[in-house]
Structures are given as structure tokens and as C-alpha cells.
Length: 295
Length: 229
Image 1: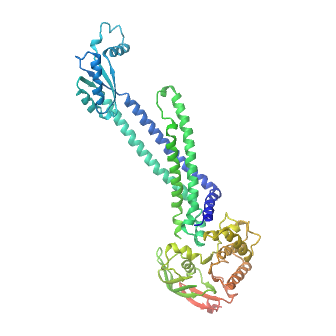
Image 2: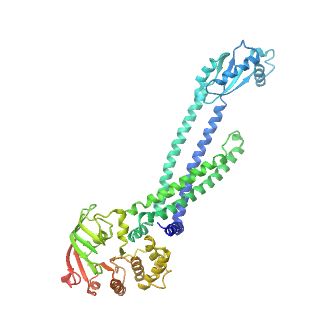
Image 3: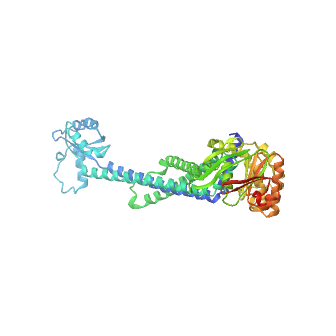
């Protein structure tokens, strides 16, 4: 194919966008709408996942040092072994006096009069990498020399793990369904847009046009419309997400929520939106005219 | 040159036998009418010539291409040796006269220079000079058919195949169109006109192939359906 022929076919692709203006508008709008719905569900599930992770992080294991180890330095040295235990993310040493101070601040200090710090034991407050392994880690901690026992809310951990698994599966299924539904809707809209051009394609075939000559303007058109749909969906998603998160964070009841800022995922959203938009635009267009090329 | 040897065509979808052992030969430079009533098999012959369908049996040669053996990717090349004209003109609505004609040259990879030289010449030949910027819906039926003829002619095909080209035209415009075909034929292009218009066929002393029920029933210079004239 000669260079001036490429130039002509690319120009034809652009011209076609304007001459079939309404259909181009419909294609871009549908691509945009589908991407926004799909993207919003994905971002929502990402936030829910982050939220559950935050809650998981608050679920800690407390490992108590044996009662006969009273010396603070000796107790703290056990920390080196504790930190070596598999699945331990961090272990913070809390001396018996610090533990008492915390306890007293939580309860009526008058009632606690006469209690001295020897009642409390030195301890380690431990955060885990994977809370689904809490029971096993608890057992490993109790096997460390100098550790008497470890206390962990394994039933809460189990509940969190279950919730997280359910949320992951549900959002994955939802996203996969939405991806398929979106691709189906988008390709059908493009199919509808090209239906009115079957006669034009028939004429091209009759004057001896090759399939690649006919396809080229559709590829250019699909590429431009897909990019436009993806780009506009990205901007709209940004606006919607930022607008909603500002409202959520500003409301008193949800101010503690740690919401993922759009900027941290923006590049991924842009790549996915543009990629999907172009893929659907180009393959949708080429696939839609396939039947008309069989003449 | 078009050659049909004992061609049979049965449409698999409806089991209809459209052609039953059709044989004829049209040599380069001839002007031939293919006539017959509706459903006689004329359109099937057209479609077999343009490669839209493949014969069930028999041999078809179109401008040196064997239509039973031709590879799919070679069909565009074969079609470039033909200029096809339809009853309903089949122009691209959103392209003006010039672009509708130039488009056929772009398809075969002609340079812009060649297009600028050839298109005005062909438009003048069919009597459409001065109408280059008009859209198809701004032209009369006769003018639209002339654009279709210009498009068919622009790549200098060996043969022009016209399917009921006068079907949407009044008698005066139909006659004008036939005179135009005669002029093109005199320049060396083979012409095959498919029609069922008896008066028009009989007005020209040309070879007539008559077909009915999928069979050739007469072939000669005796006018519409031979003995009917």
C-alpha cells in the first residue's frame, strides 16, 4: 500500500466520524458509560478491600513474657526471637509499668489503688502479615523461649478473613460480568453504527476494493472513538470519584475511613480505560463489518 | 471475455435451481443484451460474473479468471477488470460526484495526479462536466446513472456489466443511456446489458442472449427472445 493511499484511508477514517456523527456520538457515549460503571465498581471494591485490611491491621496478638523474667532489659531482648517468628510483621515491646499505665488510664484509678506493677507482665504487641495464619503464629510464639503465652482473637481474625474472601470473590465476579456485558454492549453499538454502511461496503467490494482497504478506515475510526470514549470516561471517573470521596470524608460518620486517593491509581485507570476503549473500538468495528466483507 | 460452459446453479438455502446448463461466450469488444423475464436467472448470471456467488457446476471464465478456481484474495483483482452498474445506481450518498468516481481509482491505488487527470475526462465523456461538486441526491435519476457509469469506466475496465441500468429511468433517458453505452463500446470496451425492456433491446441491432427458466433459449441478432420480435 502506497503512502498516499495510507493518508487517504486515515483521512477517510476521520471523515467518517463526522459524516456518521450521531452514530459516532452513540459509540463514544456507550463506551464511556460502560467504562465508568465498570471502573466505579472496581474502585469501590478496591476501597472495601483496603478498609478490611485496615481493620485487620488493628487485630493484634499479645505475647506475654514469663512471670519470672522481671528484668526489663532481659524481657526486651526476647523481642529479637519474637521478630524472627514467621508471619510476624512487627513486635512492639511493652514493659509491665507501661502496661499498668495503659490499664489505669482505661479504668477508674481509685478502684485500682494498691495494685502495683508486679501484677502485670512484660509483653509484646504483635502485628501479623497474614491474619488468616493467626492460630499457627500464636502457637509458634508460645514456643519461643521466654514467652509464656500469646493471646489472640482468632475468631475475629477468621471473621475478617471470611468477609475479605467474600468481598474479593463478589467484586471479582461482578467486575468480570461487567467487563463482558460492557464489551457486548459496546460491540453491539458499533455493529449498529456500521449496519447503515453495509451498502457502502458492498459498493467498495464491487469496484474491486480489497478487505484491508475497506477495513483500514474502520480501524482508524474505532481507534479514535475508542480513545475518545476511554479518555472522556477517565476524566469523568476522576471527577465523580473525587467529588464523592470529598463528601464521604467530610461527613462526620465516615471521617475515619482511609479512602484511596484517585491520584494514586490514576495512571492505571487511564491505561485500562484507554486500552479497553481502543480494543473495543478497533475490534468491535472490524468484527462488525466482517459479515459485509464476505460478498 | 466471458465464457459459460454448461453452468448449473442451485441455491443451497432454498434448493432453487436458478441455472440449468447455461453456455455462451462473449468476446472482447462485443455489445450484448442478456434478456429474460423476472426469475429467469439473469441476476444469477450477473452475480456469477462478478464473483458474488460460485456456480454449483460448470466452468466460468471472466477476463481470463477461472471463477471456479479463483482464490478469494484474487476476486478484487478480477473485479477491477469489470465495471459494474446497477439499477439503483449505488452511489455513496455523502460523497459528491467527483469523489464517487475518484473513489474507484483510489481503491486500485491510483496516484492523486492520475485521479486529477482521469476523473474530469470520464465525467466529460458521460456528460457530467460542471456537476463535480453535486451530491447524488441533488441529481436526476439519469444523471445519477451517468455517475455510476463514470465510476464503472474510470479504471478503464475490459468489460462493463449493467444490471437493469434503465429500470429507474424514463424512455428518453434510457435511450440516451444506451447511446452512451454504444459510444463506450465503440472505444473498445465490452458491454453486457441485463434488461427485460423489449423496446429498448429491439431499438438496437445487437446480439441478444435470451434466457428463461434458467436456460438459454436463443442467442443471436434477432432481437428480444428471437422469434417474438
